[in-house]
Image (cartoon, rainbow, N blue to C red; front, side):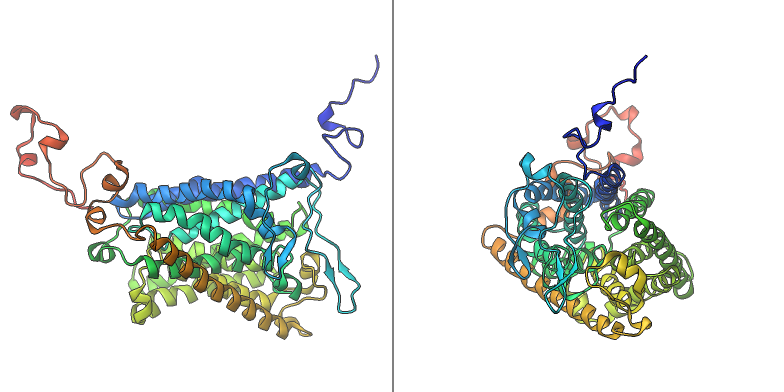
Amino acid sequence: MGTPPIPIAYQSGTSPVVPDWLNKGDNAWQMISATLVGLQSVPGLVILYGSIVKKKWAVNSAFMALYAFAAVVICWVTWAYKMSFGDKLLPFWGKAGPALGQKFLLNWAALPETTQFNSTGGLETAMARPFYPMATMVWFQCVFAAITLILLAGSLLGRMNIKAWMMFVPLWLTFSYTVGAFSLWGGGFLFHWGVMDYSGGYVIHLSSGIGGFTAAYWVGPRLKRDRERFPPNNVLLTLAGAGSLWLGWAGFNGGDPYAANIDSSMAVLNTNICAATSLLMWTSLDVIFFNKPSVIGAVQGMITGLVCITPGAGLVQGWAAIVMGILSGSVPWFTMMIVHKKSKLLQKVDDTLGVFHTHAVAGLLGEILTGVFAEPELCNLFLPVTNSRGGVYGGNGGIQVGKQIVGGLFIIGWNLLAPTIICLAIKLVIPLRMPDDLLLIGDDAVHGEEAYALWGDGEKYDDTKHGNYPDETLDPKLSTGATQVV
């Protein structure tokens, strides 16, 4: 018997399906990583947002996340990918263009502006060329853009006009996210200067935290009664969404080396070390100061740990991840529980889920700590600027901390300016905030849908709405207008 023919999918070199440059392991890991990050958003944050808010806003909050994910996908492949990772237009921005044709998507992946030259003009680090097609790269980067908008939405829940949100998403993606992504990842000026951002401490977390805070200022606050009492409608589902977020972070940080390599493994382990430490630290502070552990507090601590390690996940050692977890579980706790209550500005701006604290503060903290703890050998595995190191390792490490701060100031400044212009432009067309009569009712008024088939928020039994029943089948207590308070 002769040797059976090799299936096309497993042929190499001779088949266009498996070109010589394709590494199937890297390609598989990158697509899995992208899927994990996508699952952080849908269903992860959709569930978390829908359950952590007051019952009357469950549908609206979940839908804001779902809409953002879908809208970003279309905008990303139509023009925004190349603005973030394509050819340079400006030192902080790429040229817009579609990423839809097979000639582009089936080619060997390349980030054209990532070639690093040294001070004498010689080649320092070659252009990033992962061993898989552009289609994989486009999708991987797309889910990062999508989750950034969803994180930003956490600042605006419970009052933003849904039609205004539908306009805000493509505008902020185009005029804010792409700037940070190109500047720090796509070969922009901060990338070549050597600012460290392994997986998005600045590109994703600081930008969503500051951008959300700025947008919340312009949108305006929730109703006074909602600001004073806004309990989660389902704590167990909040934990389910948080769990998806935590484990999905393996793709978030583990996929950023663009390969299934040893640095990817280090990033995944550090991610879990920091998240666990931060959760325990936040919970400990809750017990010390409030005499009881809070489930919502534990979720916040988990998130701040994940955010803090993101810029340095593959750049720091395990002991540094523990230190970062201790600080990420305490510094944002302090700003949220202490500083927030004493600051007139923080009190004035209605940041619904405290995204400023969990993402802006934790992201900036993580970036600075990365500048302190980045280990030289790990830096050489990932960064384009050779001989990079954190401050504790001497040499030029002290300068690195300064670079991290400058990079943060750029992202903060841009995300104070861009959302302001966007919100003022949208306001010319449509109100940013829902009218008070809709805010009083919530989902039923905005969407004609409710999350649960229950009475709530003070609603009384109304036989014209809920149906009329014979007296002998109706509990007399219900006819008196008994209410369920949520």
